[in-house]
Image 1 (cartoon, rainbow, N blue to C red):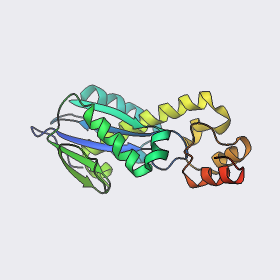
Image 2 (image 1 turned 120 degrees about the vertical axis):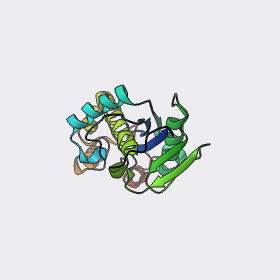
Image 3 (image 1 turned 180 degrees about the vertical axis):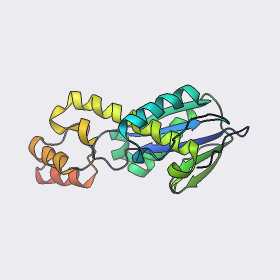
Length: 198
């Protein structure tokens, strides 16, 4: 895995939560800097929950700068998930305490920011800064979904984090659509249409 740090203040950006039917989409921006010394950085999906949490703590302690931001369910439904994701990414970069000279974003699309920016497919597995952002975004979103579980325990958000699992879809059919569900996502929209709800 390459490290892009050094004097150029390279920032990695990634998101968590594009696919779920509920909850916000979360993005993180991380400037690691040269010699950060964090071993084991990788795509957050390839790490265990315990490893992600341990690495997230290390990243927050060792990075030159980091920030986490989100876009709400209402923004996702109003903008669409891609535009809401780019909005969350822009907010994360804007919240950094250091100004990056270059921003490296996981995937195909770049947020509209006043920095040199590049999209890197599978960057969360190949660029340390993006891996770090992936880990911060994932752990932050998981924590939010655990909070939402306390408010809406019938859906099991603590287990599936809002993704369209069989259990989540069954809970949706049984309990209906909550205020934290994304109404424009097909399984939710179809359920609302069947029930004659707006």
